[in-house]
Image (cartoon, rainbow over all chains, first blue to last red):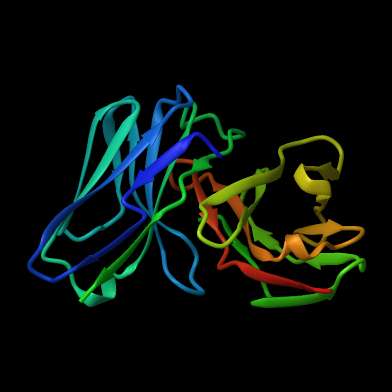
Length: 115
Length: 114
């Protein structure tokens, strides 16, 4: 295992539901990331948190709302999603976001299906 | 912005044969390159990286990658493929123009047949 856990592993929700994805890292890292993975497309970086502050929001619709209460936990709150939001959502962490030679460690992902 | 390209969606190899998964890059400065693997129902796992130094980088599970500056390539290789190597492989590069974020390719699905 990579030291990054995600729950739930699978989620099916209607377009009017509200749900949250959870990520936890046990590596002592200080940067955390949300990515969206769709079939045959590069991973899309959604949000970046460094030292618990959001430092990036890559034009993600407001129906996705991240939260980072501490350096070990990251949430993605979902509200009024669209079917095209169905994808695998991956959480990752790294030590010192600005250190360019550091690799990222990924969780197993949450497979989200929006009906 | 920096970017990587993986020209093959799918690579098929017989078990025991050598494998190559291709990656080319486009950067404005020194490239910091990475390979990740994704097994079914798993997140991405780091395999290896090139930062500087020897052009041949060795990583996990017997994989290696060769950095070629003149061809702007960073191909992933393994001398003898295993069925268990079947997975999705991603090449990535640090994007100097965008907060040093990691930019990933679209992935190459490797299938190793017995």
